[in-house]
Length: 68
Image (cartoon, rainbow, N blue to C red; front, side):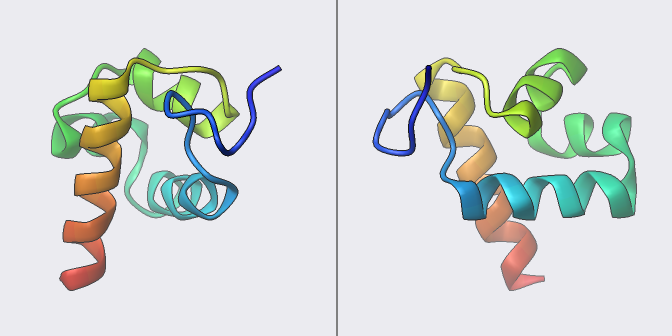
């Protein structure tokens, strides 16, 4: 089972921010914005393990979203 210290998983706060973004903008729009597949966005929202690059893209996208 994945945990927050695993570098291939998002932290609970990152997951909640991503879920809020998906609820606000939609799954497809978030996938395009983060340059990810819809499946990767779904896996991230569900807390499943991801590739390290996917985690990096999600974190960068969440930082950009916070700045906007």
